[in-house]
Length: 213
Image 1 (tube, rainbow, N blue to C red):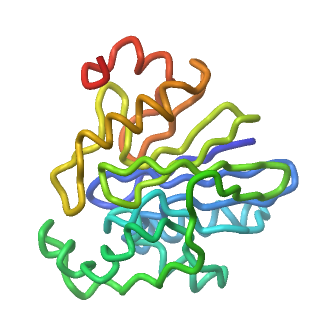
Image 2 (spheres, rainbow, N blue to C red):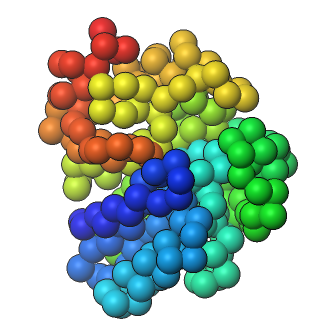
């Protein structure tokens, strides 16, 4: 499996396209905000002749769903996320105001499929296993590809850090518990693709992440 990383919007959010030799792909957390960012995402898909099978959201904070409407309109697919974050769609304009964004940003589409613990998302020859790790948000989920040895974690875990838990529905205890029980138990070489910042590995976070000691 190949992974293309984009850094989008003023909050430097990581958007991922995962694809394989079948040319089927998934888009994870499309944060494209500016017109040129939307063009970059679209052109990569078109240039590589990819077929978009799923629009996946690790959680529904605004910076991770700026591009949901664009992807929905371009490829006629609906977002897939955990129901626990659905209230954030209703608070979308409030989220924007809190961080100084205009309320004229296009409203995101509703969740089309609810994802829960141990659900499997398939595309091409790939299987993404859904793991629920609340704490950054109530509905935070991650997508683990055992065969490819990687996991897409949104804002649950970062290199040498963890997600903030002071936003609506956050819970630091649950966050740390979920990371330790569901991420740090993965093989050490597992590549961790985070919602912001550089990638890391499970073994590196076990060894050096202050918050997980």
